Image (cartoon, rainbow, N blue to C red; front, side, top):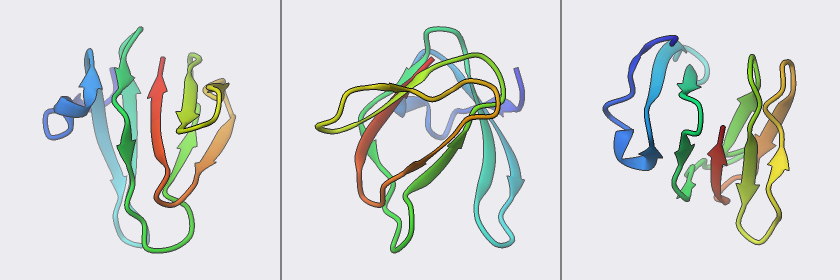
Length: 93
């Protein structure tokens, strides 16, 4: 797994995830690795403007879902997905 155990945000995940901070100089950018069958609970990223979160698949596969929409497969190598600002969402691997 890449990074350290994601203890700070563990309460938002079912199973284990790991986090490695990459940058915080212009935007907060981190690598979050999900163990197989890991998912996170419904949550909101409270961005003031722009998107709420950018997801980029670097390995494996998984799904992302925003409230009121079906889950979409987004986590394949090289795929990216921009989450809407203030959207209630969840992801799973």
